[in-house]
Length: 146
Image 1 (tube, rainbow, N blue to C red):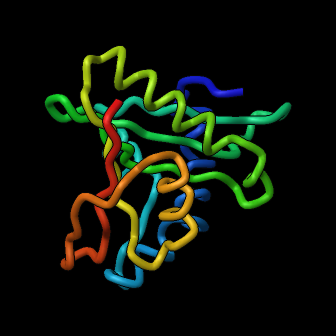
Image 2 (image 1 turned 180 degrees about the vertical axis):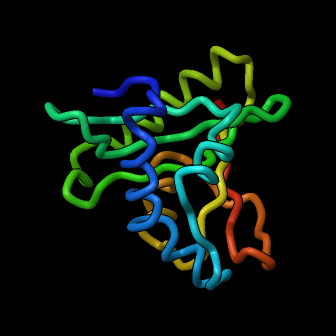
């Protein structure tokens, strides 16, 4: 089930997901990168964030979206390894595309770490194409018209 983020209920779980799934890639470029509850809440302020959960209260995945002009950016997407390959990533991306269309955005875009080949393949299979590269952070920009 995907629903809107409830900060008091979800954010501690989101920090754990980021630490386990996203931060290891970021730390390849910035070894000092860290995340904590305060910095997560600051980053998610102004985003549209949705979580997936099973029967319990613990978030098992999330996506955060940020609109800039006519582009909707996927700021972060992470799914607990135990729940990967079950369609949650696809559900999140379908939700993002639907929101982009509702907001009148013409494009959905995201940055993906150059070393995260699995994520690159996932997005490419969804129709996203490489449209840029930022050497400072070692990330590719991938985008798709919606």
